[in-house]
Image (cartoon, rainbow, N blue to C red):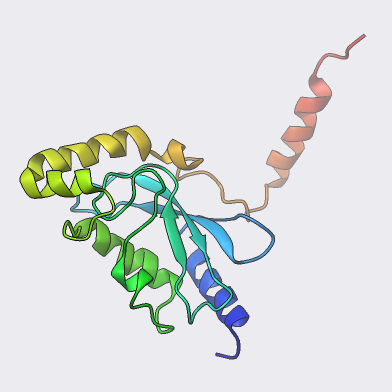
Length: 184
């Protein structure tokens, strides 16, 4: 790899091509949102979260910063800030990893196998250790309350911002404006 900026661009493009909805925050490629779906066979299944990703200048040599925007009930995610406690991202990051690894491996593993011994959400950790069924019910309640497709800014069928409008859709917008009443 020739430079961190080229690697950043390549990893971001690879993530966008992997069926993840990615929304850029600024003109640069360092801050963006990714829509993340809870893994099957978990109480998070059916949930959709918007995650903020920030790539440091030294990426891929330094790990990305990742946080949940909408609430999630999990021992290793701070309920108020959305910060993620994930060993691979925070401490053992390697330039061999890329953004697709984060969303296809690391985050699903975090949701499937929470680590209650290293919590950012002590209440969730205690409930998980004390009463797993109640913990899973609370997770599902949070998914219903905070992690629906409309909570992350659109339904899965919504066109992504990089798709162009068809000629019919483009023309219909002009017709609507011309058809309105004229103010006297």
